Image (cartoon, rainbow, N blue to C red; front, side, top):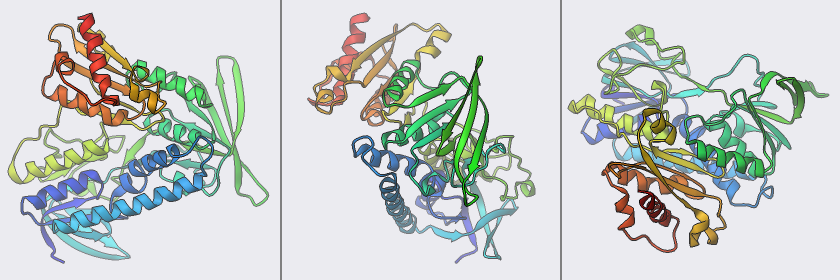
Amino acid sequence: MSQNFDLIVIGSGPGGQKAAVQAAKLGKSVLVVEKDRLGGSCLQLGTIPSKALRESALMANPGELSLFTVIERTKRIIREEREVIENSLERNGIQVVSGSGSFHDAKTIIVEKDGVATRYTGEKIVIATGTRPRRAPEFDFDGFTIFDSDTILEMKFQPRTLLVIGAGVIGVEYASIFARTGVRVTLYDARPDLLKSIDKEMVSALTKQFAKSGMKLRLGWTLHSVETVPGETGRAWRADATYTKDDEAITEKFDAVLVCQGRTGNFEKLGLDRVGLKPDDRGSLKVNKNYQTSVPNIYAVGDIIGAPALAASSAEQGRLAALHAFTGADAHFPETFPYGIYTIPEISSVGMQEEELEAKGVQYIVGKATYSELARGKMIEDEFGFLKLIIHAKTKRVIGVHVIGTGATELVHIGQVAMAFGATVDFFVDNVFNYPTLAEAYKVAAYSAKNQL
């Protein structure tokens, strides 16, 4: 293997992959350094496992599918997706080396594997090492009773009861997935509301569906302790959680606990001090608009640079960083990009929210279409879902789209494209949609908004 490259990428998640492929497309020599398995946390532990787990759970009626069957199918999907990544890198002539990469200087990476250190040089370096779950010291992450999102797929038994601590995106996704497989789930958060960054009406609808599925919500409570209880073998066999709200104190027993309380950057083994870089208190690296760190030839992309920390946004950041590194083209990340939350039911949003517009004093109109109005909604027995268009009252342009229900993460892209091209509400009124489809919701919602205008 060559020791000198135009680009060295540390990490092979979405950001690292796309940076490597883009540089290769420009005719550059590329080395990818991966300490574990190709695909990074996104493939092995995060995005793909949780979404594959969700799809497997959806295939069966609630409570009829073994959790272990779901997990085994998820692992098969991970193996197959890893092969896709391997083939992509190989087709583009990208070399891959296994080991832990760290900086010797701004253009030299030392890769250590099984006690052997190898030196590689690169004119440009991209850090794409991602993040890992933050492990608060008050929890005993034993891998048998108390888990984080990186270890949950290694669960050795099917719990009857599960406490999920943290009602952020990861917490609510796993809570709804486990509830679907028949586990009695309690979702806890010290904050009174879940998913603060999502449209309030969507969150309210999701909360009602959670309650309908039998999930217990402990929002706005104070968690005092989670104590594991040892069995005859000495290994914990349950956890007791104690929390309070106002003057009420409750202790509940759980077979397992999943802790989802944020993530921190993977930076400790990079030797950042050798190149004058320092992460913030969340383990994130600061970059400019072109994803350059304070050392101009060193770039950083993906979760390691903080929000939005989505697989899709990380991939685009990687592509843009490589373009800037080798062509000098300024990075222009799209203003309109969607968020997808793979709960059951799923949610997806793009653009402005009502709360933002009200705070800014912007006049707007909301057009809504419920799945119950659509023939396709009745066919698939999802009469709960709905789509809302947010229309600027003066320009009539579409400035926000929010969807909850079947296919939400697919449907949102129609609105995303319309917004990117500056479409007005008339675009949806004047166009024809296949019948019967859920996409018809755009036309129904557009008529609703048009009538108000």
